[in-house]
Amino acid sequence: MSDNTSLLASWLQFLPTLLVGLRQSLWIIAAVIVIGLPLAFCLALMVMSKRRLINAVGLVIVEVGRGMPALVILYLVYYGLPRFGLNLTNIASVIGALAWNYSCYCSEIIRAGILSVPKGQLEAGQALGLKPRITFLRVIAPQGLRSTIPGLMGQTILAFQDTSLAYTIAVPELMKQAYSLGGESFQYLRVFVLAGLVYAAVTLPSTWITTWVERRINKAY
Amino acid sequence: MEPLLVVLQGLPLTLIVTIGSFILGAILAVPLSLGLRTSILPLRLICRLVVDLLRGVPMIVWLFVLKFGISSPEFRLTSLEAALLGLGTISAGYLAEIYRAGLQTVPRGQYEASQALGISRPIAFFRIIAPQAVRIVSPTIATYFIGLLKNSSIASTIIVAEMVFQAQAYARQNLSISGVLPYVFAGLLYIALSVPIAMASRSLDERLRKSVI
Image 1 (cartoon, each protein chain N blue to C red):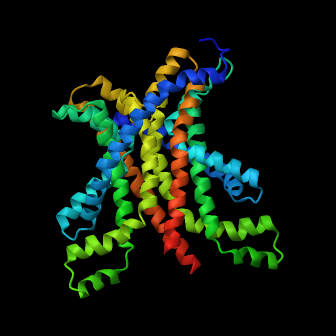
Image 2 (cartoon, each protein chain N blue to C red):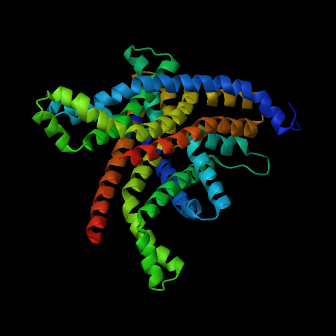
């Protein structure tokens, strides 16, 4: 392709390939959410647990998961686990690594949300003779989790951007497709700017929705 | 111990990228956060779009645009320059949003009081409003700094020889079990580096709170 093709024409040429990559990125983030959110809830419960052992295990998982860069976690999973006999495909590696990282951040958001529920609610539940488990699941958790929704959405947008790290282990997601197109056409600037715009086309509306949800939730109280 | 020493060789560059881009971002964020609050609508919308784009496009894409996109025989950024510029401007986007949130929490009465005292607007901003805002957002800024420290690892993708890059180089040469160790050490180093920052930020926050009340 020559340099004098118009910008729009070259973008139209790149777009279909990038959209194939975007679909892969969206699959990854969907899997990360499906695995990460329930895991985050469990981790939050573990960290809040009064039993020393459960609490300690939860803390270690969360602090290591949040303390290491996502890229390092990804390399550890992808290059590390096969050494211990666990062979994952590159896509499974990126889903596992990002889900761990994501669930650790989310567990802190969930924990803060649950802790923000006034203690009186727990006491009221007890006074009514509700079992602790029921009080937690039906009274505390619904109130606490409601306020965590904008935070979790924001974290999900960040995790979606982290799917671009999968490029480093050759997962054919959006960034990898962009890099391949750049290599074929030597129009790196045009390709990467378009890739950036495709990412922005997902993240910007998501950010606006998050802000809107945040406002609505704050208003209701 | 060899893998640990190899990873440590990347430590200076990790710190240079983190601190350098943080300083750049902290400065650039000042005009940007004022732009987010200005009453001039077009200017505000432009600043909002810039901040949202900086925060909404993955870091690796920014770095690739700077390193591989903008390159011609006359003008070429080195890897370190691209990393500093990329992470710096992205930080500006995040920090501008943090500054804006901080400025918003300063009660309106403070502006009105400084006006009533006849204090000029710039002086009121820098001596009265900004210090109060800084107090409120200092823990958030520390959290962002720790996040930036970890994100500096992405500079390894454009061949900045920081800790993760060193770990990768060593791992490629030693495919036995020791190939995993550099990543483990790199990960632990990031944790070890962020703990003191978190502790310092907590004590700073407590001191600032005390000086207000």
